[in-house]
Image 1: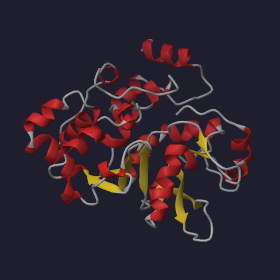
Image 2: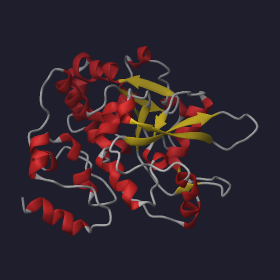
Image 3: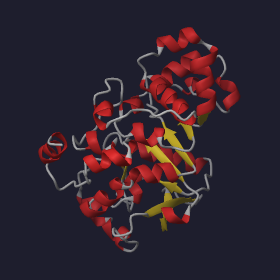
Length: 294
């Protein structure tokens, strides 16, 4: 979760100051809800404080942070282009549920808050009713390729599935825990939606040859991991197993996230062996030393 602050970011901190999180409460989070205003081109949100202990109904978003912030200077909180596209799409669809989105629900310029929220990131995704995977849609990708308006249309869409599997999203280190710990996963690509059950049926049952073509795909690996979990299997035994898995998504802009992004996947017993706590004020070399000396 690397983040570099800017003057516009610091100017928006007052929004979070009005809704502070108690870092002493390990279950304390913010949620946001889109507000619809036909008279304005801006995307507007309502932000509330909540607790994972309250079993709130919300959707956690898993996405690629992407490039620089989008934006016109009139926005109170600048967001990056890829997230802006998602919010714009959901606004067009009048999405009414509560959302948890790291870039907006965490005060990114507050190191203590980031440490606290990253420490409970696994719980946040595991407690969500659904994890919405927002797949990056580049402007060059034609609307003709984005034709899945419902699960039934997934049949016979091999070119579309190949397009999904090559999406840059699947390279992110954080998606492993975000997807694997989810109660339910839904993939969204522009206006199209694909359920994980439909994806699993297509990839692993209906076309064995096609599945073999995607053997090295992180998308296929994660679908398989979730299927194993649903049937009571463990996914990996140790933190070293996870970190040494050559097929797992590994890209992150902050080297400390190589460990933080998967730590929620290890057993409680192993967490006692590696008592590592997120601290973005700590150099990456120090974190690596703490990990390797165990």
